[in-house]
Image 1 (cartoon, rainbow, N blue to C red):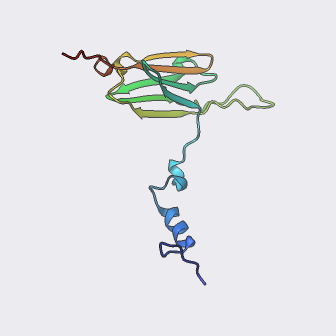
Image 2: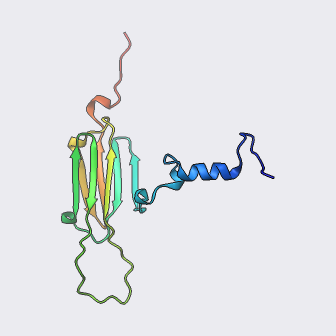
Image 3: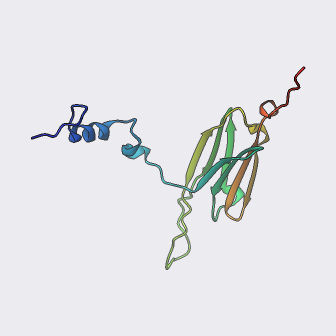
Length: 138
């Protein structure tokens, strides 16, 4: 006997439908699965802050581009062979390619980038037009 939910479908029907539902984030197609990379994005009182873990990378390794309101940060891992014979290797320099559509509220033309202690810090200030203004009542 099939147990029906209050929507008139069985749990199997829901699972089967969700498995092939492209909009469902729980079952992403294999080519859309993302590797988690440490990134913090937060808004301070004066602007937008993005911190990206870049352990072992230099400024030359990272490409930072702005196209309109799109901010892209990319590192392409070199596929060359290493000269070292590792006994243990746990520090992964994984390639990454991040892109964010940044609100026009933040001025990407004044974007600041700093790489320090394995952390890439990006800062985009709030545009002058979007800063809070006080209005006097007449």
